Length: 387
Image 1 (cartoon, rainbow, N blue to C red):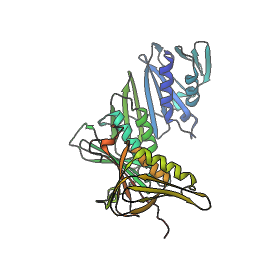
Image 2: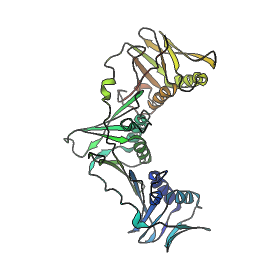
Image 3: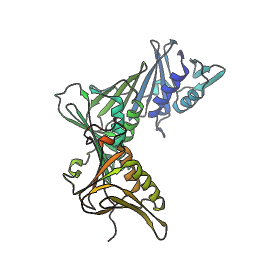
Image 4: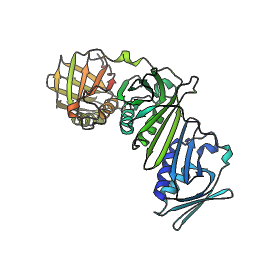
């Protein structure tokens, strides 16, 4: 293998492909990136047996061949190279990297030991890459981090006609986002799959700059299901796949209140800053208390032993006065995910879940919310107060 490639293009591609590398690989080859040259294209691939990445980079000159090298080391090296074209060449069991006056010589691993990348599933449809990345980010914030509860560590993806619905929950909050897409077959049966939240968020974010995003899907059972994404930007094609979670997602729609008894309209930046300040005196996971009245909300946290903080903000509030409390980080996550400068908090009672929705006319990030403001819902469970 011998190839010349632009430094920035190589560094970006290696960094992107290295996303799928296992932190603690079960086999040495899973820490490697496979470099393949054919038809004036350099392909860089990584695979940890669960998620795979592959990106293509055009080259100015090359000889076909392959090399498997440490992905983390290659990423560090390419990021540090001087701004000159990079020459890669395999010399026996070593890969040489020449860039300006810099020269590196790396050991290679047996290419034949590298697992075969999974084939891309059949195309399900196409979605706007930036809108999809924003939607995934809004929902993934509510996914669980406890691997002993795999059904809560994923994002549920529901496909029906021209609509996509994303949902995630960790039992304490729930995030649901709806958006439109272009299915390959609008009349196909509805599909529901569960995608690992962390992997989906990384893939969507890394492909957000694509001209469009192709979604590929095969929903097999017994852990055999696979979802894939393909994006093209700047003449480079990027592909990533991940196995679906073989777990049952909770029936989340039953958690969404059908009506509400009170509503507060708030200015998001002001409430975010107030929650951050008041939470400074709260012990870890201790709640922030919110008392809503006709035209204000009083925030408080802490006690005599650890110190106490109080703050009051003006709000528009309709309904009987309500006193409730939330985990401050969960509340901040929801407010930050709304993507708007205004929001509504919908209450049924002090101890029932509260719904957060954006106020569309105050939206500062139109890629997050549509005109009706109801395509994103963040539901948060209050913390029960003593007495």
